[in-house]
Image 1: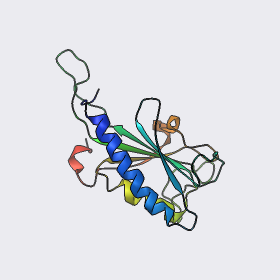
Image 2: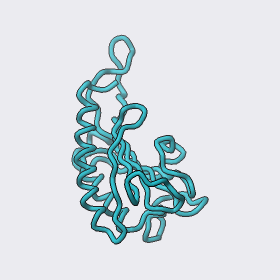
Image 3: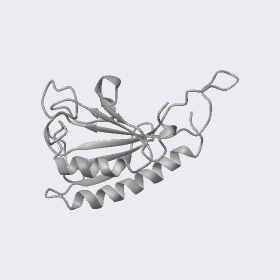
Image 4: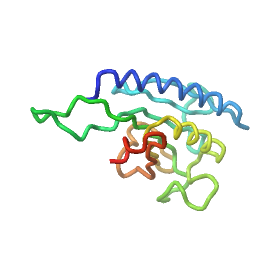
Length: 170
């Protein structure tokens, strides 16, 4: 459990990031839209897609960003998870470029996802400025990026908080 105001901080930050991504991604050769919603755990969830409400198809410019909290590693006197504010955690899920690839950062210009280089730079540039740890997940080639893809086996990269590095590098 996190500090009671933490979900509201995540929601506010998600709106700010959604607005910034909307402006950045609208200027691309193929403009993308950003939709702000909530997942089943009421965590903010951004969907980046060619157009709002469009059905997903393999290989298209599509990604999701979940705004989560770093789990507390402490417990209270009862042995329960300590109710404290924890740092924010952004979890980006993208579709892999080809079947069987193991890293999102090989020596290719598109970071091994189906997203274009310009799209990747706009997303990473925006998310790394938030002041949160960023985790990048690869849902696999031909697999839609969804919250269910956020599992340890799909984790490809972790970037510590660049603004407050000590709060996310435990």
